[in-house]
Every structure is written in structure tokens, then in C-alpha cells.
Length: 310
Image (cartoon, rainbow, N blue to C red; front, side):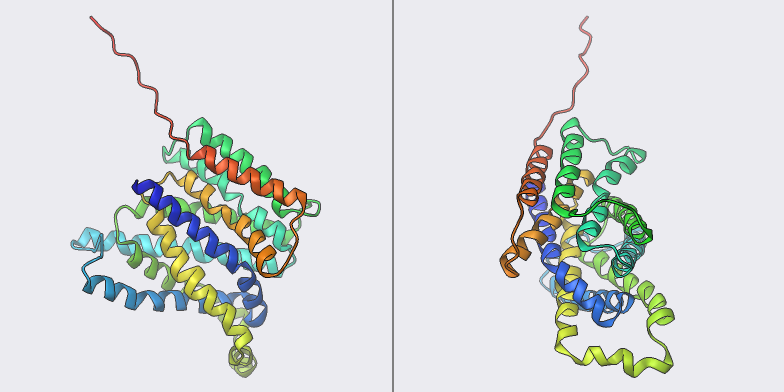
């Protein structure tokens, strides 16, 4: 029952991310990719501070640190997750602004669904045949859904592909620490870490003493703050926190498959909100992804070795 609930939380995470795709594109164009990530993650952290205080007051916090080891796990987990998330998010944003189309970026980013089980083998995270089959079917579905042009590689594509490697490490790091700590607290530390790391390239490439007024100008408009607030509060503060909570007791490969629904929800949101039409190829891609995720959810009992009877 708990696993099903956590799986639903991951689907909700994918839904929020899918709808947020347009917001991320517009926000990055308005203020610059590094500034956008710095501000959105800082907002995500700030939003969680009163949530943590309220949960503590209502005594609803699970995993609140009590010992020195608990605090160490929380800080190390939060900083580790935040470092991977900052690197992945900035690589992705840099790839998109450098020329990778949105569809190709979605497909290349989602390649973490292949990398998670492969890297997981190094940490003895085994998957049954149905999950591996689900991964293969999902990759085919994502290609049909996301890629409308030839899959020729350029420098910007390599940046996005690298981001999928880092996202895979982010998922596995959450799998390592989420059972040990309070998910909301770790998420808050994660976002503060992301904001600090993103601020470094922001100060180098986008903000300097000579262009402060020019940098601030977009931040005085509602067109810039609408996507920033959505990405900061919903995509970061809510969705990434749901990811940490939802990944508890869920196989990391199954979690990655569930979160790959982000691409499906992005296309469906475009059809519903922007009146974009889905092609037959995109519909087939959506169906394949749903079939793959359903297949991966089938419980398979491990084979037991027969006992020798005297």
C-alpha cells in the first residue's frame, strides 16, 4: 500500500514537471539560465522553511534528526542531492539555450531511465526482467514522443546527455538517503545548495557590477516572475520534495520510469493548454510509455532455491 502511494506521488511529480516545461523555457529566456535556476531554487528553499516549522508544530515530521549521525546524514544527503541537481539542471538549461530543441532535450534527458539500472548494478540494485523490458519500451516511446528531427549530435546535445547522467546519480543518491532522513528537510538543504552553486556561473556570466540595472529589468515584469514562481514553488519546492518522499520504498529504476511520464504530461499539457495537436507518432509514444510503466509495476517474486530434504 505504501509503495503504491509513493508511486502516485512520483506520477504527481512528473505531472508538475511536465506542465512546468514551458515555464522553464520562458523563465530562462527572460533572465538567463543560471539566474533562473538560482532564483527558482532559492524560492523553493524559502517556501519549505514555513512548511518544516508547521509540520514540526503539528508533530507530523517523520525522520526528524535526533542524533549526531542523523544530522550528518541529513546534511550530507541534502548537499549531495543539491550538487547533483544543480549540475544536471544547469547542464540541461545550457544545452537548451545553446541550440538543442525542446523535444530532443526531453528525449536525451530522459535517457537517465537507461542509466539508473545500469549504475544501480554497481550498488547491487537488481531489477527483474519486466523492469528491463519496461526501460527498453519506454526509450522507444520517448523517441516517438519527443524527437521530430534526425538525431544528429552537436555540442549542445552532449551537454543535455551529460545532464541525464547526473540526473541518474541524483535519483540514486535520493534512494540512498531518503529512508534515513526527513524528506522535507533534505529537500530544503538541496535547494539552498542548488541556489549557491547556480549563483557561481550567474555571477561570472550573467551578473556584474556594470550590468545590474540591465539584469534587474526583466525581474520588474510579471512575464518573468510568472514562470519563475511556478518553477520555484511548484516544480522545485513541491515536485522535488515529492520526489524525495515518493522514492522511499520504490526501486530507483521504477521511480525513473514513473518520472519519465514528465514527457507525456508535457505533450498532453501542450495539447490541452496551448491547443497543440498530437500526431499519430506522438500518441503511439504515449501509449508505449504507459504500457512500459504498467509492465514495470507487476510484482514478481524472487526465485527461491529449493531446500534439500534429507
